[in-house]
Image (cartoon, rainbow, N blue to C red; front, side, top):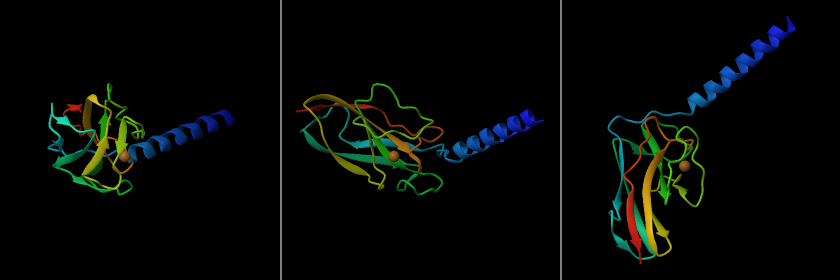
Length: 142
Ligand SMILES: [Cu+2]
């Protein structure tokens, strides 16, 4: 009897955990598109340059603000593989968050080739289902 109770409690605990995780996920608008306005693919840029973010079909909201059809920008710098789309995005040298709702940033990169890609995250920094991901561009830093 006691064993059954423990099993039932564990089941309830794991179900509520799943519910919490599920609540943190957001759905993207079907026509949502994120893109880099500038620089353009193949552009030669100085070491410090501005990146402008474009988004259509959805809106920008700061991190922590839960509102349907919104998210905040993340830039993937030299990201060779895509991050786990089911978890909050980490903050690393390769993933920068714009949780204030910024729509552009200034980057300083080392000379040579670099790739840039934008990924929208929801209020909890989790990519939407489906992820709203830009084309990856390659730039040459002088
Ligand atoms: Cu974020």
